[in-house]
Length: 314
Image (cartoon, rainbow, N blue to C red; front, side, top):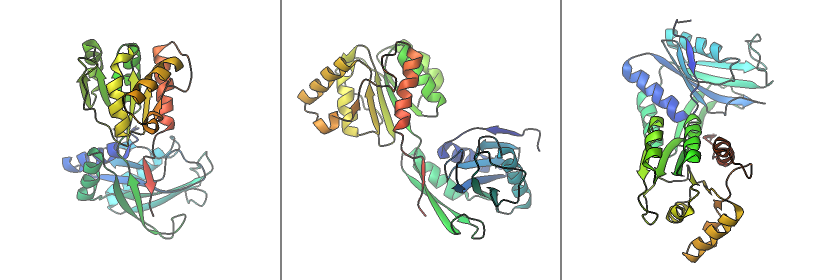
């Protein structure tokens, strides 16, 4: 094992592809690892990616630590011999000393020569907030449900638009960055924006008056959380968010506040159908008074609505 041997626990396909493309551009040999099939329980979804660099660094993971070091070794061997390798762990595997605690099975393909043009095209699509499809050739003698080409559809990294001010905004942004969201921040408070700059949000927006409409990035892979106690800042943001139809919209406040909020949106012409998509009060745990706990509760609700990061097509 190389002296640099370590695992960087990145999760989203966009991050793994970015790491792989960077390695290829730098001239460092690497092997792309893909989960092709699972049986029973598994730590990661089918279609999950990782990349093993010749230096011994693996970016991404396929288990909860039980076999990742072995996957790294197989990746390094694939780089040395230049051959694609199919591996099965769990029931029916030749590696009987490496059992999966979940009792299932996992099948992988390790490719020591992934095509740069394919990876770059997929990465470009994800960065442009579009779905992308990648194909992998499976060994017909190994794959759980038949061989041939397997296709996986990957979604862009989930984005989170946070608008608000004060400790709840700061706590939520900090937690969301650690969870891997593409972060966008809007606030009327310059101190909040300055404080959160260390998180390197994808975009920041200074709100000058409640009446000004902001062009915030929103799509079907975006969640929107409004974290104001002074709710006059919400109205225009909620109108534009509801019409953009992200996968989640939530706003801070009591049940009474939410009733008033909905009434004003209806009076402003927002349809009852779109109003119904706005969640409030946000959070899986009601009536919290601690900013960090509100952040956890709110992001837990967002997480419960997350679309699938990847889906097997064939």
